[in-house]
Each structure stands twice: as C-alpha cells, then as structure tokens.
Length: 212
Image 1: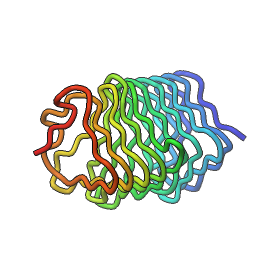
Image 2: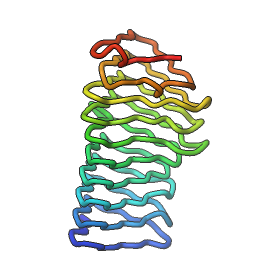
Image 3: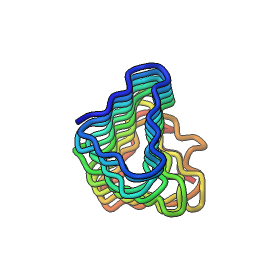
Image 4: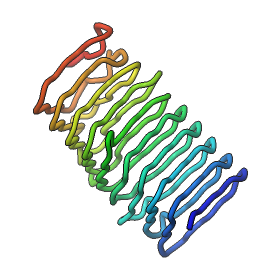
C-alpha cells in the first residue's frame, strides 16, 4: 500500500516504530512525513513534488526504492541504510544523508535544477553503485562529511553542475572516470581529496575545473 500526502500542510508524524509502504507521494505544499523516530521502508517509488515538502527519515536501517524530488525546496533526510536511484531536480531541493547510505542504480544519482546532494556528519559515508551525474542550471554535489563518498561508477559534471569540496575532510573516491564539463568551479575546490582510478577529463568552459 502507498502513503500519499496531497494537501497543503498534511503531516504524518511517527514518534516511534517503523513505516513500511509500497510507495510514498508527497505532493502537497509543506507536506511532511516524519519517520525519524524509527525506520522507513519504501519498496517502490518515493516522489516528493510538493514545494517545501519534507520526508524525514533520520532514523537508521532505512530502505528506499527509486527516489524522485522535484518540489522547490523539497527535502529528503536519510539517516542510513539503502536507496534505489535518486533523481533530484527541484529548485533548492535537498537530499541529505546523516548516516552511511548505499545508493544503487543506473545512473545511481542524477542532480539537476538548483538541487543539492550532501552528506553530513562523521558517520555519513556514502557508497554509490552506479554513475553520478550532476548538471542542470545549478546542480551541486557536496561531500560535507568525514565519511566521504565512494563512487563505483563514473562522475560526470555537465551543464552548470558543480562539485564542492572546501573542507579538509572532504573525500571523493571514484572507481571509474571523472568528467568536468560543468559550471564554473572557481572557489569550489579549495580543500579535500579527489581520487580517480579511471580517466580524468575537462571540457567546456576553462574554469570547469579549478583545483588548488
């Protein structure tokens, strides 16, 4: 069965226990599904299209199927577990991990619009089984955690997409190819470490890669 919150300010708040659903759809403005008190399991698709809608899954042991976030300022917070492919394109939308998450798909993560994908906290190591594509008019990948990112696939920066690394602990390991053909990286890559086992290429504007 599915969970749908279609109306403005719809709220489903779970203080303890777990949520298990076939699908989750948050289409209402500021719709909130709070499962932070336990685990969240969604076997099918999770769609967050409502502007400022929030899926709070900051508990541990979560499992998501495919995730699509198109709402402006929409948010999915993942406390740890697994996820199917993530496609996020809402203006100022955010997918953020607070614990270790493994994301799998083909591609595994696609970031567009003005969206941001980020991990936060010492334990939030991200393992990606598949390609990561960051593009659109302002998509951004920000490995803001000491756990770092391991991408078992390719990392592609296209359009105006950017990779932001400005902390000493920022680490991205790509077991594949890296292509910087995205936006202006002036001031975006000032610290941290990027490891690439495959080919590295830069194209497009001269500042699509600006290392320090």
